[in-house]
Length: 314
Length: 314
Image (cartoon, rainbow over all chains, first blue to last red; front, top):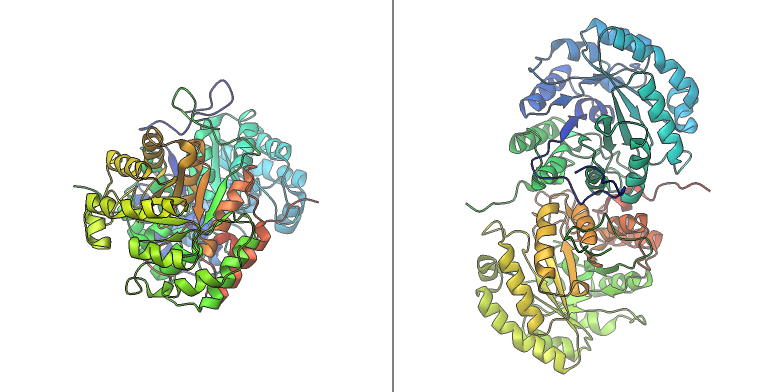
């Protein structure tokens, strides 16, 4: 259920409510993997994920090949995979040039990213936050002109690797700016997995005061093991759009300081346990997680894919 | 805060509330590790954990050496480590013989275990649940005669590897029986990590109708990544005693189907983020997690010990 009038959320969403799971493995996951995959494997991954029932599969990123060589074949991938009816395949674009590349190969939906942290933006995109927003405005406008919905990622919303804690007011300001420029959805993102439950609740309540709740998504990395409790409090706050990365792509269980995307199958196992509807075939998703992990030559970073579903009665 | 009159819990505990973290790594953790450690390393582990501020360190187990050779040196360990003022060091005992061994080497507090699952008890202790309770009654009575407090583990409270789902009524019945025979504390235990948030809330509410809330602890394994959200809903239900295993001892991140104890440091990171008091020095705990993992020749199974604490402002 959504936040009550008292400002306190009830404990957990009601059974049968729908949660929209956004699969970011082919983009956020693979861009953080050291290993390169052939375009054909990426295409098969996207197709398998859609077949599992994921309503949204972020397919790739049109950032500079110099920045992210793992996704240098974005044009090939986006133009070649078989689209499934009713599934959205957004692609990440950093600027107008990226938008044009995406449009050339038939993108139907895009995502953009910035951060409330000047320090992070300078390191990541070589400009401060206001300059970043100024550069993104024409990207959003251009996408809307072509009828493409736009998702805006608010990176480091729970903490920044350079400046540390993130003032809530800065997260709200950037979220509001992105909505004002035309983003239909805001993804409050704990890019470095430093947030804990109370901070998540606080920032979501502040953003929800400025942005309609149904347009707020959460994107957590499990770097410090907090992603699922953070999703849980997000659900209590009325959030119904949650990101995951199949097999925990982007975070290797062995690596120290792993990026640690929240594994989609661990997320869906919790959501289904809460009686929530996702439309996702969990056993098929686990199979897909094991398959892509084998393609990467390692065990899945997801606990569910390693342990398997528990035995049920009957 | 505790459950409200409506039966719905508020969202999360109040800042400044105390949570008692029970460290089970030296017992539940090490008994699930394939590798043996020298008694001296176990002794150092127990001493380090107490120094980190853990109020309870379950030191070892007096089960048959044939069952758990990893803890065959229980007598040596328990008689040799330096006790820290104000810290409790319970030991697990399976029967009267185990209790006598524990008493000989100066145990001050014990823990016993059974399960509501006849199938699990038959496999694990070769008798059904009622017979198990009958065998435990003199153990508890004997401990109380010597003034030793007793904790009762209710294993497979969220699911059984043999019978599958666990009826809540059976968990309540066994919990009530253990309290009636003299257990001061009940640990509702998800031994195989199959429980999700709603099931945890349901079983805790049912047990809390029969057992006073301050005497109920939760013991989660992270086999399927659900331990922390399950702790979170437990806190919402008013639970203030939570088990953890330093470095996630008992669960190897590489192993398929790892036992996956909840890592104490990941737990404490969440608790402190919620503004709860534990008395634990988290950086020292992370150091201890890294040290014992090195002794085992592997990376910590805990995400926090791998990634480290996030940067904070100032």
